[in-house]
Image (cartoon, rainbow, N blue to C red; front, top):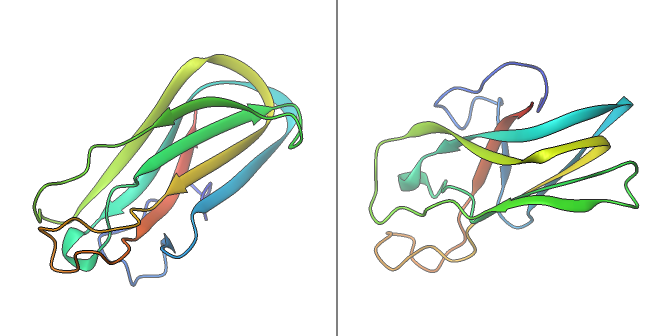
Length: 134
């Protein structure tokens, strides 16, 4: 689902999304041959009224095996300060080119919705449907 080339739609109930709330998103991509990578983009759904927020943090790790991964990039996307219309958004992690055979991808959901949100104090969701590796 994360690498099928099919973007999700604006319906979080469509079955085209992976949603994370109680646990963080953590996935691995394994390649038969080493690849040169300098950017990873997470395609996400933002639907603040339904508690689906931008991720609090996104990490990209890389290496020759799952046991020797190094952190390639961490981003902390800007969080909204009000309810906005539903949207699809890409969260881009760019870094110096690196040869890897394994990527570890992490997306951390908001653990406490802000005081202005109707669900203040509840956990937010992180919805991801596609990951692009360049």
